[in-house]
Length: 242
Figure 1 (tube, rainbow, N blue to C red):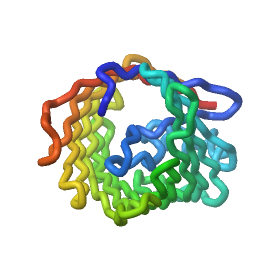
Figure 2: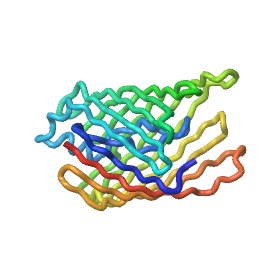
Figure 3: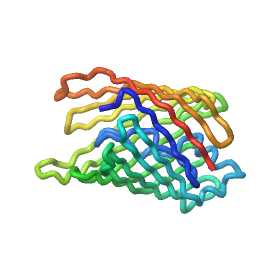
Figure 4: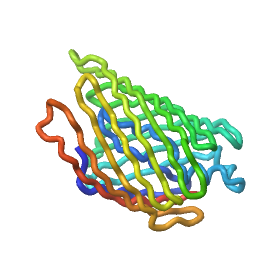
C-alpha cells in the first residue's frame, strides 16, 4: 500500500506552496489536512499578513512516478482567523487522474482549524470528509496538536453500499526541529484499521524556506488481509514561502 521509499519534492512558483501532510489512500486517510504550523506562523507574522489574500499551492512527485497538486485561496479573515477555498488533484505514473478534491477550510491563529471537502475518485465515486485539528499545548519548546476526520464514502459502483471511515492522530514537535506523529483510521464495513507512526527531523530552516527528513512505519489490519506487517517509508520535504 505504501512505497518503501517516498521522495517528495516541492516545486515553487510565483505563489507560496504547501503540501498536505497526509498521503492519499482510498477511504483510509485524510488528505484534507490543514496548513502546517510553520506556514501558519509565517502567514500571521505582521509583515506577511498581506498573503492572506494570495493563492497558495503545492506540487509533489513520488518515487513511483505519481504526482499531486494542491491549492489554497484565502478569501475572508482577519488577524485571528482565515477562511479558504481549497482544492487538489492526484495523478498516477501515467498522468491519469486518481482523485480531485475541492472544499473549504477554516484556520485560527492559535493552531485550530476545520475543513469540509468533497473528493471525486474516477471509477469509484465520491467521498465527503469533515476534518479538524486543535493545538493542545504550545510553548517555545513543545507543540502538541490533535487531529481527527470522518469520511462518508459514496461509491457509484452497483451493489457497493455507502460506508464510513473515521480516524485521528496526535502530532508532537520539539523546537520546530524534531517531531513525531501517531495516527489511526478505521473502516467498519471493510473491518480494516490503518496505523501510522512517523518521525520528522528539520535539516534547515530559514526565514522563507525549510528542508525536512521524514521516516515512518505503517500497517493495515483486516481479517481479509494475509499480512499485517509494518511497512517503512522515508522522504525529504522542501518548502519555500513568499
